[in-house]
Length: 282
Image 1 (tube, rainbow, N blue to C red):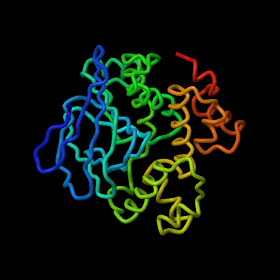
Image 2: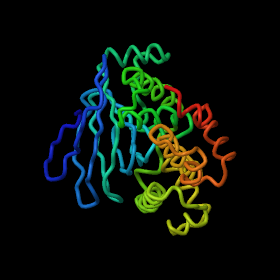
Image 3: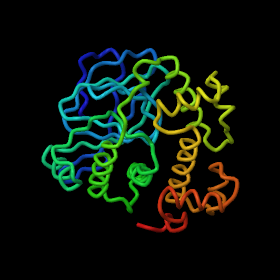
Image 4: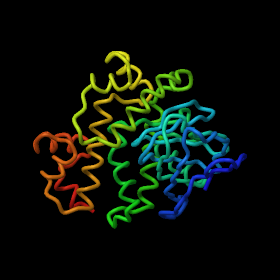
């Protein structure tokens, strides 16, 4: 892995190689650190992009400090030092892609951004990354419909294109109280995304007014509470469609959608195809 520890008094993330292709390797990285574990400085030995699958944590690097939540892309420039902290929750799981310099530069050139280095630490979990995130999650289960070499290129191209439009972080580094409140809500939604949640109830959990909660949540995560909840449900549904034989209606209801038409409409908007086509498409 590309993590180089300079202190050893905490649990080191465990990694499992998922795939290796020309110019790129993919690992599942599981960290069980928590609030009692002191972050230590590490270094990106290669350009790296990690897709957060579960958990949340703070990521601090030369380009800024951000709260990483499921569905977001952690961006790492080769040679940069960084720290990941779990002050407000325990554990996370990511799928990390590591690129050799020539291969990444070629992708950047083809995307139209030669000599590209990331100027922000994160791409938030917006709609544009949703199809790629779903394929990354499928890679963990060795879905035969996912080609690791193609996926590595798609992840890099998506990150390079979208990072150019991301606003540099403003809130995460200097607002620890809000960070703790939002991180608590993020974890609760992740663990219970199928249950109905409204803005007022989530704001009460964060002990903020609806207005201030909405502002803080969007500022720290890059998405609104409703969008985040919807994408958690859609990712869960997408995973079940590829791994289970349950009826589409049953999956929709289990994942928190009140009716099939709403689920079909939301799924098509997120993934560009119907749930039934997504289930059978290679």
